[in-house]
Every structure is written in C-alpha cells, then in structure tokens.
View: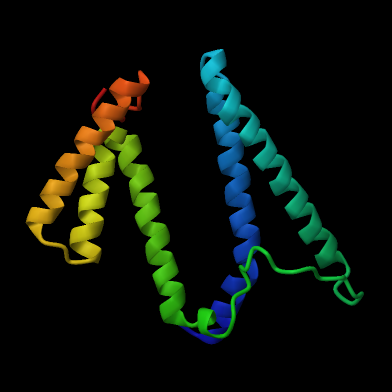
Length: 167
C-alpha cells in the first residue's frame, strides 16, 4: 500500500468511526423501542446519548474543516485516532483491519446462528486460526462457553437472539 493512500485513510478514519457509532446508536434506539419497558430503558437512553455525542463530534469536525486557515485551538487528542508514524504503516493498518474483520465476523455469526452458538464458534475460530491453539484447548473452551452462556441465560432469565438460520 502506498503511503499517500494510508494517509488519506487515516485522515478519514475519525469521521468513519463517528459515523459508525452514530449508525449503531440509532440502530439500538430503533430496535429497543419494541422491547418491554424494563428491558428498553438502558439501551434506549445510552443509544440516544451516544447519538448526540456523535452528532456533536461531527459538528465539531465540520467546524474545524470550515476554517482550515484559522487557528483552531486543539485540545488533547483523547481519541488517539491520528496515530504516530509507526501506526501509519501498512502492516499496522492491516492488523487493525484484520481485527475489525474478526469483530464484524462475530456480529455476522450472532445474526446468523445466535449468541449461544456464535460466541464459542467465534472464539474457537479466533484461537485456532489467528493464534494457532490446539484443537483440544479450542474444543474445551468452546464447550465451556456454551455452558456459560446457557447458565447466564438461565440465571438471569433472559432470552438471547437465536439467529436467522435457527428460527
């Protein structure tokens, strides 16, 4: 990958992240509206708060872009999305994209096969494919995770998504 392309990606990374958070927050708000009152309160209001913060961040970015020649007082970069020179290399960016792909894979598995099976399948795949763990360790951990998820469902009396393929 060429350095100018990586620089362009890093320039757009904060905006992309904020738009992702905004989309996710609005999705949570929309989905939680159909839930019972007690189950809806926390995700609904956290989603609204996250959406408001994302809109405020986008407005600040637009304000800063509108006056590039004027000195805009920069505070500390608490998001640390700019990165230093080492973080702007192709291997570092590739590792970040790979991690993002693994997280998207978990979300896709939850949608397709449900939380109870998705977590152990994803952890097993991550351990075996990414970290080279032995099949015995992977199988033991996957079985333990299925048991843990089922125990939590029973103890907390909660229903978790079953997935599109298992309905």
